[in-house]
Image (cartoon, rainbow, N blue to C red; front, side, top):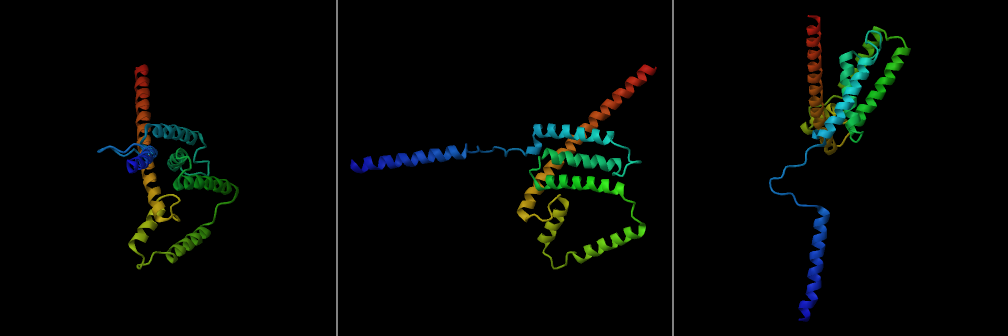
Length: 211
């Protein structure tokens, strides 16, 4: 009887610890349950990005024309505005979003400096291009480089801010960046369809009133 009474509190303590651990870990996933969706696939994130995208495009359309401005052409400006809105929607929590925002700030400063100085001569542009190609060939990838290293370098060039990231972090950034780009395509497609529908309605109403 003494041994039974002494083992009962120990068993109760073990059961209590097991219950606390289960509560801390949360409910166990049921069989066949789907993984939680990416944040870029939620309706909330889609709405946030769509509003920021529309605001960015309005700023581009309301800006100075490309004929009198030193900025990029209108199509490139829209693409940069869409990427900037995507980085803002990411709230700077990823390396690629911070790289896009930093690149945007550098581009704005370079545009301001370009307006203050004279355009470069053709010879200086040729020299700059020659030096750039020489540096690229000097740092080129040799045949002895492992394929995984070459793939990581290519991936680092495709993902903004991914050149100096460790490979595991680069894979995480790539996964998030691809999901964000997919959401960007969906949002821009929906926006283009909405603008086309508005344009068709306006043109049909104008034709009806003129007749």
